[in-house]
Image 1 (cartoon, helix red, strand yellow):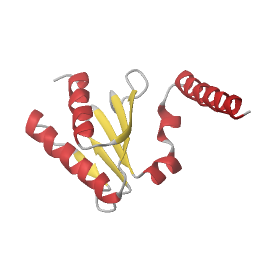
Image 2 (cartoon, rainbow, N blue to C red):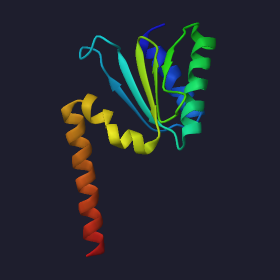
Image 3 (spheres, helix red, strand yellow):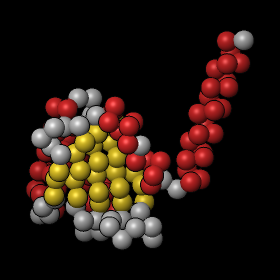
Image 4 (cartoon, rainbow, N blue to C red):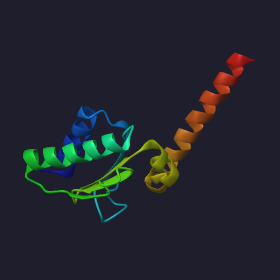
Length: 129
C-alpha cells in the first residue's frame, strides 16, 4: 500500500470520528522521517484519545499495520507513527501553543494563509465602516 493510499485511510478515519481542522502536510523531499504529516484537533482530551484509538484500530484492521502511539494517557497531544505518516491529534489549546503547521508547512503556504486572513479582516472592517 502506498503512503498516499494510507493517507486516504487516515483522513477517512479522522473524518468518521469528527476530528476538526485537519491539515495534511507533504513531507516528501523535505524529511526522511515520513511522507506525510497530518495534524488534527479534538474538542476534548477524551475525544483526542478516542480519535487516536480508533485510528490505530482501523489501520490495524484495514492494513495489518501496527502504529506506534504516544501521549494517549493525557489526551492533550497524541502522536501516531505509521512510518509513512505521522499523525498529531491535539486539544485546540495545545495545538495553538505548539503551532506545528507553522514549523512544517512550506513558507508560501503560510504566506497564503496569512494573506487570506488579512484579506478577510480587511473585508470585515470595510463592512463595519
